[in-house]
Length: 511
Image 1 (cartoon, rainbow, N blue to C red):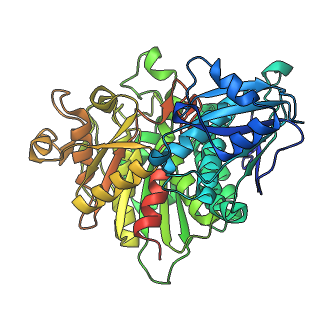
Image 2 (image 1 turned 120 degrees about the vertical axis):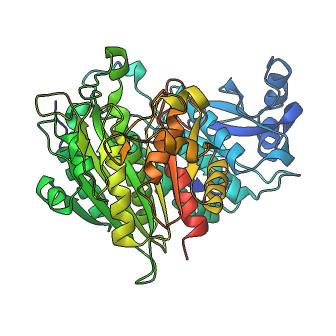
Image 3 (image 1 turned 180 degrees about the vertical axis):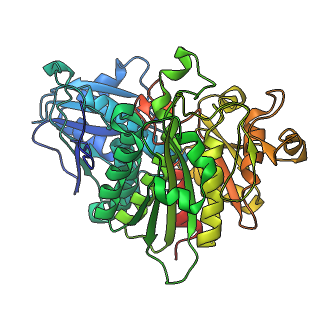
């Protein structure tokens, strides 16, 4: 099965905003504060139903209004709605954007489990809350949107009971017009996250470098992004020998995409985002075991994050100049493949002794980093890659590794990640890792000597291809995919780093 280039899946749920009311159909969701304290909307419905909510809360067991919890009351008398969903808000004074998004994600999961086509979610002014109702509604809607993602492109059969029926959610809140404006910005970012999730989830037979490049070119051009696609001939002319060495074992040629969003002042240097895009990674001749290869369609997650971020900036017409550069290759074994022991060149002119062909992502990024700095003279560069298994050993599957040559850039990234509920942990660079890269016959090796500090050695390798510009590297190997549902992310491709990178750009580089 082949999906046409440029086809993008759309989330079926529609999110709207309206003034506070009680819907005539579907489910009405109302908030409950800690210790089963009714919000104004809950009190209004309790009165309309002759005290049904308070009676239900008395027998609700463990539900006491804690955040990310809920309780359903079917068809209470006095309402036209089919059910009331009580959702926990926790303590009013602790509410903030991250917690409200998590509440929205929990609401999405609960609403999607009901056999109803529409829902209204009441959001009130709550005494003691440090956030206004319009912003609360926008943040809850953002969480709803992110969690409601589905990827059904390849399903040809699906039982009716497995299909979610929820098609529309209306946020009913004071200041609903303001909430709608706030949400439009969030929606652009959510669409960027969904693009990244789509790309990562797509099977490798439908995202070979040439297909992937066509799809991104179509999608981003439609958003007003200037896209350049470099084919094999162009890459050879440029001298990207390190990247091309990874691709030489495949029958599918490499592609590099340069994606430029020019929303800022003319001649203002851009911020540059660089992504690893190994569309399938067998390990090359340093072949992975079958268990390590099954999910290697995700090895282009860094490129997906870059594309999603550029899409988000373009969709909301951000007042910033940003460039995204991604290298798309397949790492395959064949008679033409790069061999362990080969010495290869690079765009920088530096030579690399390849001791392990499964340490290929750094070879792709080396040329891209050098090219980005040389051509665009950016204010800052951030590369994003599923680079090392070692980062999972160090940090697990919820935190990405952060390496940086610039302390301020590192601090800005950590703050952006915290604000988006995407966790980063800074790991060290240093001369001891440089020493591990020394080669007897070339300028450097592509791996260390003993396997220790693998993520740090890989980051130190990349640093050799950065000159003066502030630079950071995100190793997202552990966070690009989740094996279980997270607060605003369903099981599967996470779209990790799109929200963090977008916030970094918006907070520190946008006019």
